Length: 123
Image (cartoon, rainbow, N blue to C red; front, side):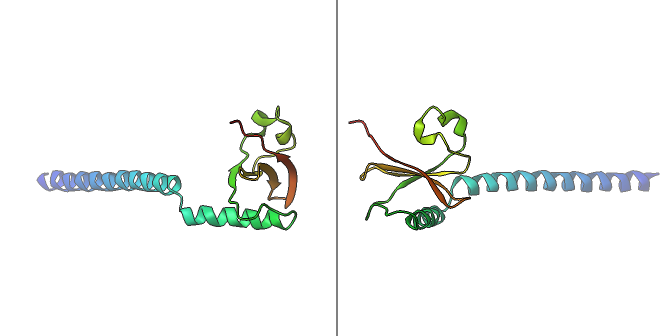
């Protein structure tokens, strides 16, 4: 009888360790994944901006020596009231050249420029 309890106790301890390792491993992966996604590699972001600029440059002349701010359209319904975004779709890229006062709406999925507009920036 004593051997049964001893064996059962060992089994329970082993199961507690397995559960602990499983929970700890899952929590570690969750934290690591969030940190990795939050802190994107600046070189990867710069490479994406460069690729978008090269794609747009095949269709039009871009301002020389200027680095645009690039944004992605995530919810076109919120932007529908602005004429510039009237034909925007999810995933479209907006290149904003503040020095040249120009905004470009580009659709990478179709490799098309959807809209170009002058940019008015308040003083």
